[in-house]
Amino acid sequence: MTNQINKSNKILLTIIIVLAVALVAIIYWQKVGFNRNYWAIYLDTGDLYFGKLNYFPKLSLSDAYLLQRNEQNQQNPFSISKFSNAFWGPEDKIYINKENIVWKTKLKDDSQIINFIKNPQSAISSQESVNQPPVQMIPVQSTSTTNEQ
Image (tube, rainbow, N blue to C red; front, side, top):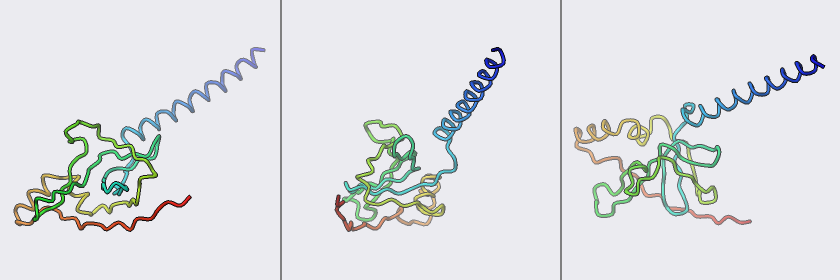
């Protein structure tokens, strides 16, 4: 009988250790993350977001930025701003409905957007020193396709 209890305790202890390791791995992955790439996500609303794509527990973007249109500024009609800096004070994570995604793409490490995100002050000062307008984006014409079900 005591041999059977010891065997049950060993199995229970093994299960607890495996679950604890899995929990630590999930928490680490969510909080610290691995070297995740930045993505661009274009929604059917016309909004274009940049950020680190997460699939668990729901599709979301963290460290999110938003491309904004400024039609009054002819020299630079687009600007990029951090989503968490919006006037209503959102967290720095956007949950996205998969059905609203028109397209998504991984950004290259050397893209101008990534350079701006990683070092916004450097991007601004280098543009001022060369007297160039800030990063310009070409408007994308949507070739909308309807989801047939």
